[in-house]
Image 1 (cartoon, rainbow, N blue to C red):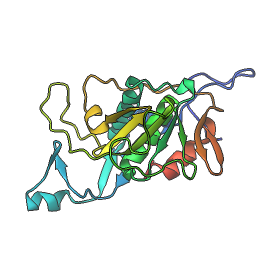
Image 2: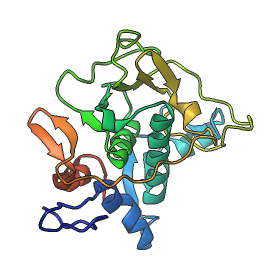
Image 3: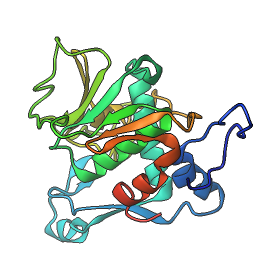
Image 4: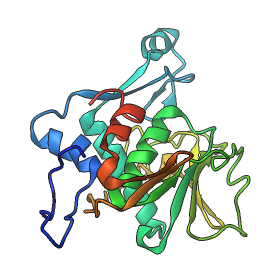
Length: 235
């Protein structure tokens, strides 16, 4: 197992606690690596500036390039999403599971995986778990278990900045929603709501399950290389 910086040091009777997201984001930032590019995504189809679609052809050309996020922004966006999930009542300790629909953009998917790991929320990546959805909450609804959390696309215009409770910050979740039971939230709005607190990293037991895959479970203690190879573009 790759060495971790343990929150609680292992002993003969206690396996200790750790978190892979701390190793990939929090600790490197503390070591001065906040500006390293660690996540890349495709060029946006409709470039935005402060939540507004760009119409100037020169700006469109300048902004239609692959998106690069540094470690500081990845930490900021993933910890904010984790805070949004907590504010919506998601309690990982209760057995809640996150599924990510196939229509979720790559950047939002990656940030969702990191947000879940930050607070110990299990993500179900098995075939068929991320059924594509369209519209707000399609395929999930009142009959869904309250512990089932679904990240999916929604039909929604970007939120205009200017409201007191909304930060003029690129959410990275334009056109993405989250449904819990019968409640669906527009993440473009929720991610820029200044009233939602960022989630602190949660210490996890090494055998805590973080991912359900077709090849089996991946625990916190064995997940570091998976997140490096499957989520981050570079670390």
